Length: 308
Picture 1: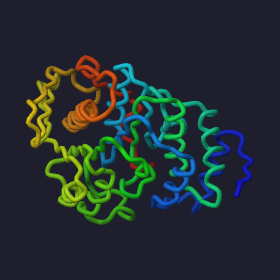
Picture 2: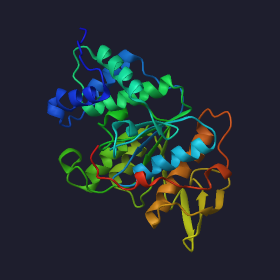
Picture 3: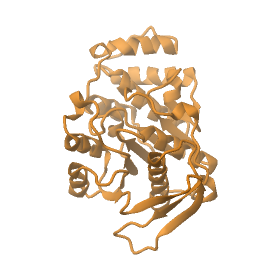
């Protein structure tokens, strides 16, 4: 069934999407998004990183974007929420994509969905990956909006997943205990793929799920760690417990632009992604230590409300 639309501008589309499905309310589940993804044949041909977590996921996405951009890779980044313009959510090389790219993608999604009703957030995830594929990015960094297991981003299999931290959030959707929330966020992990956790101890539910599906769990203070040098520089060390390879160190790194011990943890998670992708993904050349020795993120990446 062909859907008739009268949306011409991006604002027309956004106004429509805010009320079209469930009155703009959150409606968790992967069936709708998964079917439209299948119809559109959205299959990334580059490494995909999915980042979840109660706090810190925006910083990790920003760090990764800057590292790979600095190293000469073309990076597609999906984040939320936006501060001023919707376009901020979908960026290529840290630059928001144009209205025209987004509306063209929305039109393709609208044509493919047929009888399927999609939420604002589902359109968002599908459009981002559709645009990144067409822009031929070298790596996709996809930030989870809510939880993980049932978030629209999770219809795309990742080469590496990150859960930055786990605490009570969105309890109406994720559960009333940290263990329940941990299970939901661990839903982004994939069998045989690196699964990075920036919290130790992590919820037992997260660890158990990683073990149950055969994900390669890497935990801060066990498989990688960091140390501060008088809040001026810091060191990073990658030493997976089940690897016979010697530890790899990145020493005397300039301190992240955003200060605080938790920002070192976020930066360490980003560098662990770097190590994992260098080992497991199809890079023609890997980012060097020089490319990631300045971990800076713009002021716009500072903490925002947890809404998507």
